[in-house]
Image 1: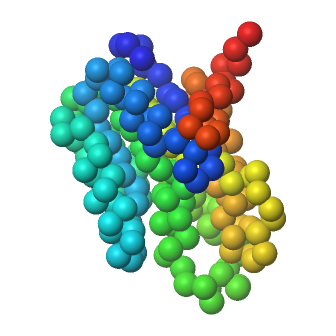
Image 2: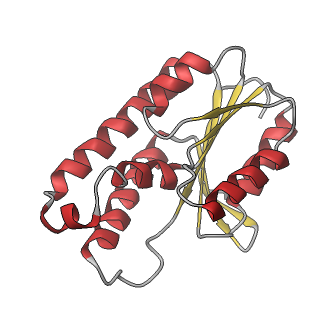
Length: 190
């Protein structure tokens, strides 16, 4: 990645190799890294996964655990980091959905959640512009599967899909991870 400021978006399904590829890119850059983890430990399994991820990151990397207001928190904690790795946008959107219980989703106006996510991503995009650091952003691509069987899951898929589109527009490079193999989508090769 060198010194040039760059925004890279990594998309893919579960266990497609997104996080591993993000970490490989960050290690190869030799930059000072701020790793932004968006996961919240809602149960024991998630606590164990978070701990495993913490142990797998290089000791020299600083970590910011942030479940919302990512843009402001990154700006506040970036320090001398030259590269910010955000893992992941899917969990960030999930955290916003987590402010509501299942019964609220039965009557919740879709536009409320859409607006909350749009504000969160707008704040992040402002951060991308304001800082001199490069970014590697990880998110799930959910549009390749079947149509979910419930309203909440369909709403989540739709909002995350639009969020990924917004981030892809801001990105200099976009990769789709498939079975651990990065397929470069932007800029298109050839």
